[in-house]
Amino acid sequence: MQPARPPAQLFMDETATGDLVALDRDVACAARGLHRWRAALSADPDAHAEEGPLEGVRHVASKSTWDALGRLPIGGADAPLIAGLRRWVYALLQARLAHADEVAWARAAAAPYGLVEGENPRRVSWREAWRDVVLARTPGEAQQRLEAAAEAGPHLAPIAVKIAERRAEVARRLQLAHPWEPIVGVPARDLRATASRFLEATGDVASSLRAEQRHVGAGAAAILHAAVAREAGQGWPGRLTPRWLSETFGSNVAGVALELPVFPAAVGAASFARVLAAFGFALRVAMASRSMPFAIAQEPGFVAAHRLAFVFGALVADPDFYVRMLGAGRRTAQAQARALTRTTLMEARLHAARVLLAADEALAPRELFEEVGALLFGMPLDPRLRGAWPRARDDEPARWVALLEAAALRENLRQRFDVDWFRNPRAWSDLRARGAEPAHQPVDEVAVGAAGVDMLARAFEKAIG
Image (cartoon, rainbow, N blue to C red; front, side, top):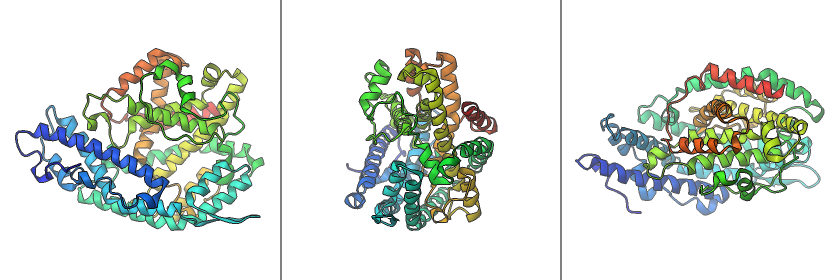
């Protein structure tokens, strides 16, 4: 693609609106290209390391374009488009400057740094070690794989620090208070305060669940192994396929062009939670209005898509879903929903941990890393994991806001369309209407505040019983 006019010439004549439309097209092209490149890089770092997905549209990822957009009037009909474009230019600028670091992380994650001991010792990569934690047949095997991941951790942590330093430097040059500011518009200190509050509020129920699992061992490996929920298999199909989603939700998804990832093998019921979450994310993205400018229809944090992902992912912890959609008896439904509530609670607490441990310009303090590990797993994590896991992703603040807001959305759907909203055509019409709205919406201050955190914590306590 040929670059559009240089940023210095943008928005400086009477055709500013036309320039904005052209810029929006280029932003859409850049965003899609970046998404494809990241997926390809993760699968094969060496094959795609030299590719530059933003070089052909470099002007959409530059400080000059950011500044030019900032000089435009903030009122008027173009205000939403200008704001949306500025968010995307910021995200793309961060991504362009992170190219070498992303390549370095992908290569380090694929390198055989970890050693799996046993009768047939072998070297594995960071990605292989974590995959094998999930696939492990016993907590003991999971512990071996976790140790292999920990051995690889020190090779990844310095890259994470470099990424954090760069993001913070870019934010400073753009006169932003924090790198997260344009993504969600909530101060980082407030997000961390809610993450800390959530870990504290769910501490007792997490401790009680760990006590129930003492027979399988203690620590992160045992908890991660149990979270796969192999025992909650009744009603689920033998294989994970898009066809299962189509058959489950029927005509409600007819005509919706979903871009779904490659599904993993079904290891336990938690595999279906991930697929349902991916379905919810893809559904919200696909429902966006095609007549709306890209920068309004989509936003770089994908808060709305993550929010719907959490709503659909949580169906595995809903007894009514098992009864109405999987044909399970009420007793089985309640038992399996409780098992998956354990899984979703662990995932939610991991999200909170990532927000707390997110490095601004250095590794999280050792004391904080040990404290958060103990809160999550009843004992500190292997110190070699510090900086590498749990690691905040670029969109971590958006995921955290979405998680807190998802509880209110789920309750709204249940109240308006009954407990089986997921098979009510009127609920799906409502979701379609929401999907046609601008992606960026004001943050629900109640949901993302102390009251919302406490409501989510109480929901987990009630589900666990």
